[in-house]
Length: 302
Length: 161
Image (cartoon, rainbow over all chains, first blue to last red; front, side, top):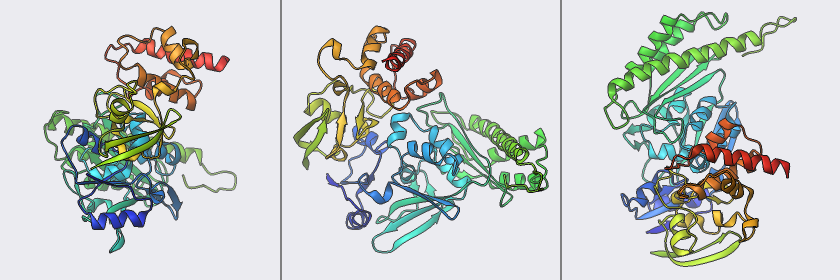
């Protein structure tokens, strides 16, 4: 096996162009399992852990650009305020040791239907920045990135450079079902993002279809229900929350597998959908209340 | 194809030949460097028994490709104590002994490193924080209560000293 260990991004892209069969490795939390168990013997490994360009994140013009090599641990410590759904999802990944190594770039590369980072990226309308030495950089809307079970829209000569996530303008949630609070591959998961600036709601599900996907009808329904409540912070009827949960579940195309049945997944998605919207709306109302008009009649955006 | 792997382990520069780049750092430590403290159990990052520091970050050695460790600094459970005598144990190791947090002992090295890492970051952790920090380490004897006792004890002693 060849082992490439480029020290810069252009070098990494050059290696990938010349050896498209080379398998990228960063935290190794997926790939090393396959190597250890002899399930896979790549002709070549392309180590991405020495590339400074992948290691950082930047916040500019309402978007956080997270380098593909940034660990879940850093997302939790650095980005909880800017991209809360992704940070909350990151906190449910594996264990401290896994979060110290694993990256969102790797999660996207593996493109598992159960990838914990995926629903938050879908709910917030993120973009995946990929590059090749020949064609340069392009940005793939997250909704077009997942093409099937463990497959994505990368060309053979491309590598994932970063993910660009819009900065949250309102409350965001992530919820996941599993047998314990750590070391769990999701049975199913839901991410939800309220966007008071755009007066919209994003929501997406994981582990409930061949790819992670948005729950578009649920989003539309929530937008409609919230349209006359953004200013007042009015109550959401429990029946509305329940209906939202049903629509979240209706977006799924789940299967029976070792982690759970399709029927259980649908049930759990409805519960998680209902809860996440309830939590997020309560949070929004609290912020609205905390920012109630002061003596000058100014109301800062929540 | 194999490589010559050079890295620093427990403060010493180590060099081994004939390393297959795709083998794990855990294999290198145990089978090529005679450091069997890090335990080999699940080989998939589930059990935490192989927890080591890689450039100061706690990781599962089974999930690090040997080639990724080139030039890096590794500290294993063998490197925590400043010396070989019983009086030289790291406070976390001492606390595991005193609290009776060792049953079969297999998970102990990984838990000691994980607890060491926790107390380095957070010297007086509450119970939820301890539980979250040790969530990636499995004890098949299920001796978790004594393990929690040991971490609390190590935290108390470190705070006093």
